[in-house]
Every structure is written in C-alpha cells, then in structure tokens.
Image (cartoon, rainbow, N blue to C red; front, side, top):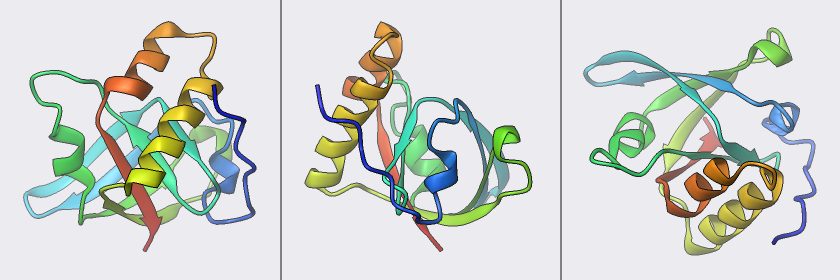
Length: 124
C-alpha cells in the first residue's frame, strides 16, 4: 500500500477528501456531464478512474484532449478548468497506489483503482 500523498496547494488541492466530482466536458460532439468516484489528487493534477468493461475507453474518449470544468458540491463555487491526458507510467503507478490507499475500506473502489481506466487532468 502506498503512503498517502502529500497534497500541494495546487489548483486541485481542495478536492482532496471529496467523495464525488462533477466533470462537465466540452467535446466535439457536444457538452457532457459525468460524475466520478474514485479519484485522487496530488494538488497539481487530478487522476480519475473509470470502471473496466465493454467501454473501458469511454472515460478517455470523454476527457482526453477536451476542456473540462471540475466542480463538487462539497467545495462550493470552486471550479477548475482542466484538460485530460493519458498518464505517464510514473503517474499511473502513483495514482493507482494512492487510490488503493485512500479507499482501503472499499474493495470495489480498490479494484477500480487497479483495473479501471485512468485519465490525468491537468489545469488548462
């Protein structure tokens, strides 16, 4: 199990500890809203996981290269504009370990952290 990440004061820092995020993606085929759990952040980037399945590329299709507004009811009016990218190998390793550690009490979320799709969101 990985150590809990030390969250910087970056643009995503206030999302640490939030259980669900709203992602409003602006895609070439129109705007789409997606609610997501689980995710982790190091403050500078947000790592979003998706369920494995028949459309395991759906999250990548929605977020990679597209501008996305990230909000949460828990953080009030905070809105972060981001762009999705594929994670580097180091980012993927860190994010999967951090997510397993964060959700140590929930086997289903740990499974998503190890098996599901992963997108890294960077500030736009």
